[in-house]
Image 1 (cartoon, rainbow, N blue to C red):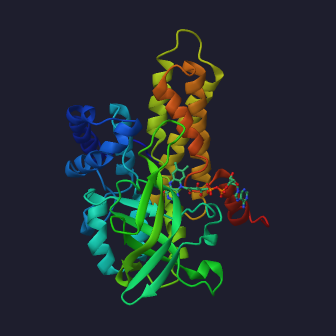
Image 2: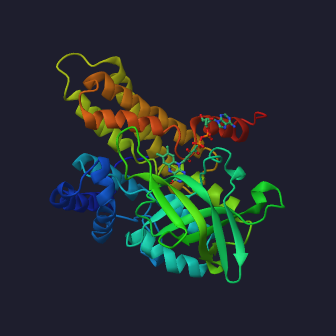
Image 3: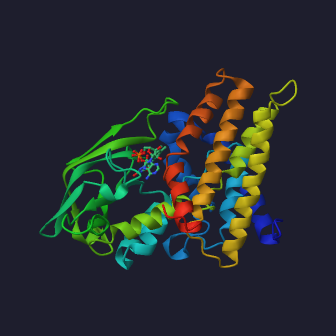
Length: 362
Ligand SMILES: Cc1cc2nc3c(=O)[nH]c(=O)nc-3n(C[C@H](O)[C@H](O)[C@H](O)COP(=O)(O)OP(=O)(O)OC[C@H]3O[C@@H](n4cnc5c(N)ncnc54)[C@H](O)[C@@H]3O)c2cc1C
């Protein structure tokens, strides 16, 4: 493993650094202001050539190795810029399971940020046990008609499109009766309500009610009943190391906390520093394996668990250093609590590790 930049990587990093010096300050980094301007930030990064680095050229990406995504994350954190909008898991879901027409119609807008997306999987009664979802899509001529209730839907307030899971066949075993759709969010029969997070943010996610919303059958992703396969691809990629490029952000927060000390570092901060460095090296190792052609399976759950531990260690360090006096750092602590829930809870990751990696009978 050689962690130093190649000449091409160094040139890319330098170009990005120059661009950030001019542009990073223009965009808010947290709170509702961040969510309100996230689309502008996405489009600005894309237009400058620093978003979609590893995705296919055909759909507007740059087809570079995934290490370029990590360089982007490192430099954004270094410059104090907002994080890279995360939607790789949706690109993978549609890219792997959508037919050619759906890919050509939807991937470019998703990648360049001109069309906003959300992921409609979780429901009030179906989170960890996603296969129990009850939203239905019923065929009616050339369309399907959707009824149901989704919750914790990130970006639902601004989304143009939703990658939706709905039950199309109640009479087969439950995993087999689920289909995936690309459904328009801005239409009659779709109602979005914001949810307020403990950090005070109201723009990040909401709940969505579908009451007779329509989706053309041509926007079914794959065949009827293929929804579960798509869901597994999407959640698998939510847990992958390239999406885990947050290591740089944690390291920056640790440095920021260290600079506030006027005495010895509390244990929590020292622990967070060690954990952050461990995550950085782990992400690099995973990427290096990817470059060698190793395809990761259930070990994405190890990455997700590790990232959660580090995020929460840094959150605890923020609390130990500043107490509750700094609203932004307090927000980091609060947000770290969500990390063990979103994209599959820590308990579910442990179940996957136990059954699929360790071969234990869970
Ligand atoms: C910030 C954030 C963003 C999110 N964004 C989205 C999004 O964009 N789209 C979307 O569809 N969803 C989204 N989610 C929802 C997320 O996927 C779910 O919250 C998650 O899957 C857990 O489901 P749940 O909340 O229903 O909890 P539950 O499944 O009800 O779990 C409750 C508790 O029981 C435990 N538990 C459940 N089953 C088991 C088991 N078999 N073994 C051991 N313990 C178990 C869980 O670990 C947890 O501690 C988001 C969540 C958060 C926090």
